[in-house]
Image (tube, rainbow, N blue to C red; front, side):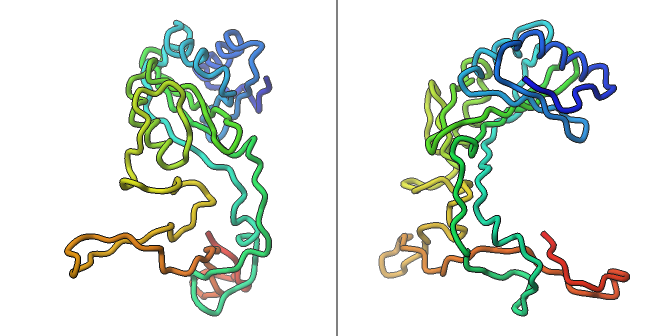
Length: 236
């Protein structure tokens, strides 16, 4: 357990830090602070038990789950974005990757939860670190029933498996969709394209015809509207 600037001067947040330290002592976790918000970073094997404590113990009473989402921390495309070179072909340009960027599967995926305590009037973000190319964590549908569709969405878009979920099916993508479109190694143009075939009088699916490319940052050139800016610079 470690903290990054754990005391913020906010009495409610500091009380929450103390409560987490008391109840989760001995667990592999740490707290992160940014822009007045606190994130509890924990491990998958401890999450379900911790979630019960966060919901039920009087020190927390996080009885409302407002969101669950997935995160992919892969370094895909990083080398292409690290550039100061301008393009003569427009703001959006494609670039060939120099070499693939190896992903660390042990730190690649996370499942993120946002909790609200109406009793104590405070919020908490939890980031559960997941391991392996098939990331898995216990479902919290039995703790917060609203997690049902949230977890299905994270499964559909990121391929995160929620152990014990009562109905873990895709919820946003089409029938027979292959892959998980929010993973950073999923091609921007996808794998298939669809169109209406007037001869068959139905929608047909075909291999995508768009040439794969990697997007890089748009470049803002020198312009009088930007004061003394004399050098082109990449701009996300």
